[in-house]
Image (spheres, rainbow, N blue to C red):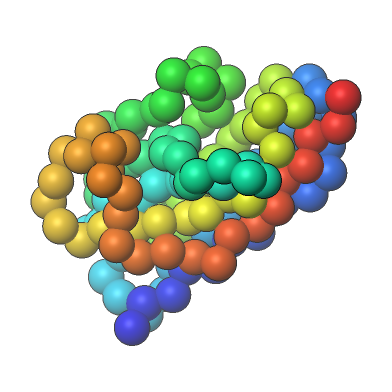
Length: 126
């Protein structure tokens, strides 16, 4: 079984930045599409961003486009989410996800992925 472990969450003021990391182990995640999702209190989990196995392809939710950047390092089996210009509405538990099926990134935006981490909390204060 594979494992995804997120880190980098915390408390930040509005307008600040954070970088989340997700360390993947136990499976060939270098060939998987990877993504970030989030769940705010009282809301359903939503898609944030995804990246193809080789990295050139990315897809973002409209709410984070031009503020967040997803990237990956297949040598170190790590995926990152650089979050800039954070706002209180970005407060959520952020989940790393992976999927070994060869679907489009838009598919994962709609349907989610099939491997999940346990999440890291990001709190943005106003």
